[in-house]
Every structure is written in C-alpha cells, then in structure tokens.
Length: 309
Image 1 (cartoon, rainbow, N blue to C red):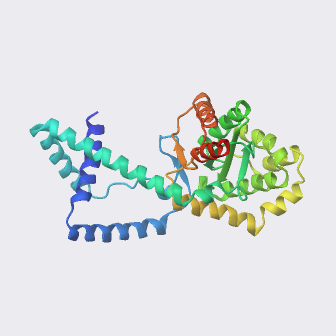
Image 2 (cartoon, rainbow, N blue to C red):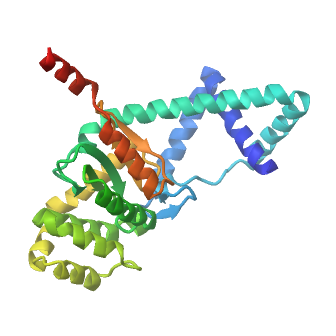
Image 3 (spheres, one colour):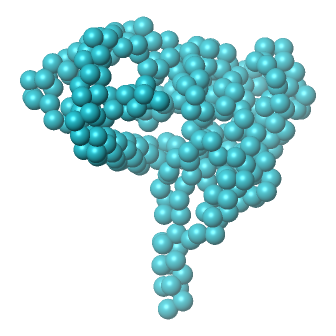
C-alpha cells in the first residue's frame, strides 16, 4: 500500500514540477528527453508485452527502468516529510495534480481523434464486421495475434448478432512478436475480406477459435476451408499494396499515440469518436450500441424540424 501511495505521490509531484519549473530547467529537461528518445528509438523493435490493463503494448511504448535511483529516493523522502507536516494539504495537492493530468490527457485524446477521424472511419483499407450500412459505428484497432484483441473481436461478433444496426470498422495494427507474423496474418485476412466480404465472417470466427498462433499451413487451411481461392488470396496478400496498407495502420497508431491494443471507439450521434474503456463485457458493449441506436444527431433532428415546418 505504501509503495502504491508513493508511486501516486511521485507522479503527482513530477507533474506539478513540470508545470512550475524554470525555463532553464525546462531546456535541460527537453534536451535530456530528446537524447533519451533518440536512443530509445534507435533500439526499439516492434514486439509486445501485456501491461496488466487489458492491452498488449509494443516494446517502444513500454515503461523504461528508472536510471537515477538516488533522485527517486530523494523525492520519496520529500514526499514523506510533506505527509507528516500537513497530510490534508498533501492529499489536496495530489488530487489537484491527478485532475490536471486527467484533463490534459482527455483533451489530447479528443484532439488526436478529431484530427485522425477521417482515417479511422475510412472503410476502403479496413475490414468491416457486421452491418456495413448500420447506423451505429465502432472503430477497432487490433492485432490479429494479440490475445486480448481476439477476445474482444469474439465478443463483438456476439454483440453484432444481437444488434443488427452495428458496424465495426477494424484496422489491423501488426506488432505482436516483432510484427512479422502478425503482418502476414493481417494481410491474408484483409485479402480474404477484399475478395469476398460475405464469406469473411465465418473465416474470421474460425480464425478466432484457434488456440495457438497459426502457422502458414493452418492459415492456408482456414482460407481454403472458407471457400476462397488460395492462390488469389496469396497473390493479393503478398503484394506491395497489401504491405503498404499494414504500414499505414502502424503510422496511424503512432500518430494517435495508442498505448497498445485493442482500442475500441464509438461514433457518437454528432459525429465524434470516443474511446470505450477496456474491461467491458458483452452486455456492457451491447448497452452502448442500444443507447447509440436510440439517440438521434442534432443535425438530423434539425432537418426533420425544417421538413415538418
């Protein structure tokens, strides 16, 4: 408990310090951060790990080990002294810092989603699950080999059964285990969807039922078993255009500063995208779909009012 308390306190103090540091300190910090960032970028490889939040995280986004333990110990001593002197004021400071950080993150996410909305809702280079003409739109960013992603995708198939108005635009972000096999699987799934969207639902469900990472033989067997021409699928999946499509999703994920996958978003009636917190079960997601289906956008309401007049 004390360790968790100190971690929260340290985060809050660092947040406040960052907001109140002197220009010279900011300059040195920016310089050091830039140097560390370059070093991290040069070593980063696209592999993944589970972070305990329901996300699988690319290596370059995983937390680095603290390098200056002495500095952390100094701050811990300062924190404990503050707690002893004035516990109430200290907690108020922590709460203020947490609220500030949350508001800052929410604003950044809102701006990033607004900026990239057209890319996220573009269906040409994506896989669309459910009703392609549905009036409730979800956007999913997922890796085909990410276990948490596969669990969510299976849930979404069940939600689609109960909610025929739901459309899920799925972008495949390949990064698990270096991204090579993920990229290959993603390309083959995309090629199959492109060749015949009607058959894709059954292929995708069969794929999600696999208990282990599919090798080429298993993947080819699934595609043939779903009634596809394997040679045509291979030709499309191994094309430069298919590989470029996967890279474009990686770029999009980077622009969005996604912490990992899966990331599920919902389109509100007024046309804005919002992230659905992970951890929701099938019933929770179905309730969101039902609520969105009932709501009506202001623009449509205004149009109907004009027509009535």
